[in-house]
Image 1: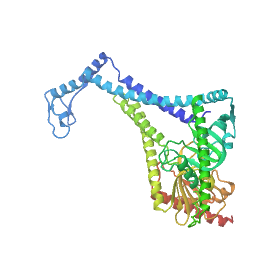
Image 2 (image 1 turned 180 degrees about the vertical axis):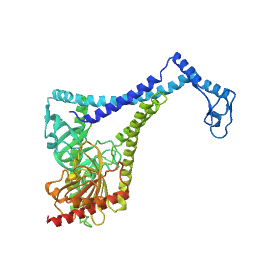
Image 3 (image 1 turned 30 degrees about the vertical axis):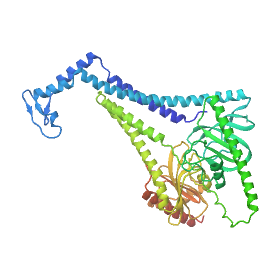
Image 4 (image 1 turned 90 degrees about the vertical axis):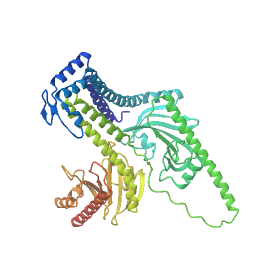
Length: 535
């Protein structure tokens, strides 16, 4: 299965550019002894000391005070001697060695990036052969592809993306039915999943290893008690792998593997996990039945309150990837370093071009990191200040509420704040488009239900992607009023009007409230337009 092709091509091109910079730095700073001697003589012959902007002549004396004056103070002869001593062949050789080390560092960064691409590509290309070998070794069934395999497996929303599954191995392991397959999640990221069918049904539960709260928000209190009491799952613990179970199905997902032995181990671990879960459930049921019998023999002192209902939200996933942001920043710094090193090597034009490219990567990475930090730290504070609820991840918010986020890669929302602002329901959250690029969305409930699909863009066909009814509603007069309230780019359908963050970095609390106010005013303008149109 070919996935992440665009990311691999970009990474390869970046690695080649960094490697070329390293080669250029090394080659321009590698000289023989004769070349160093000639360069030293040429520098000394062409050097003329200056004092206060004026060229000195033999017999002149430069008198200077203050910071940095030691470098320019002295007679013409003393200045010439100092320059000559600092530009001997061995001094130039030391400078070359420092620059060559800088080039070697760039070579190392390029090599690491290429190795990462090659390793990932090797795993992807070897996966079909490894699955066929695994199936042949155990007389299991191998199927090349199933256009609805991942959908039929009913993967939980936090791992599912595209419905197709490939390189499917089906069989029985220790009398337990399983299915091993590959699928693509949001951002065209390939994953492998192992789905096990258990003999008994279990309540819905999702375990997130290493998290402060190791359960999803919709894992009920009974399931949490079972997982904590019988399986020993606790915060910040990696002893139990992450999994999702619902009914008689248990599924684990991870990065692809290319070794039949590792694939078999992955299946065995998943089957063993299902066995532990079934045993824990049976033990819990026996204990619960014994408790019920014991309680029936005595009069209860009071009636315990009903257990709280599970949260309607989806999977909580507190850890958001930041690796790409750091890598982008490091690459930008490396490219900038390589560009700057080209100036003393006599390549000012290339140095300027490469430095500008590096600066773009560096500033983009820093802005990305700033946005991540602002969202991670600021979003919970924003929720607390507005008496709103905060969830790190909701597995199916976009689908559940019917939010018209176009090009969304999955139904999941992260760092979600839900509440009311000026007596109107709102949601602020992060999402990923079909290309895996992150974005911020602001959803405000419309005062009237049943809106047609509306799309207002900043440039080009501003009504693009709107339905026929939506285009009739977005008249030039309505668009002018929407521009006056700074509605920006937004989409609307059903009960919600949704805007996106058009800025490079995440919005501050003040700007977030301003964006919600603008969308609320836009909702009022659209409601008035519908009343006037009689819709």
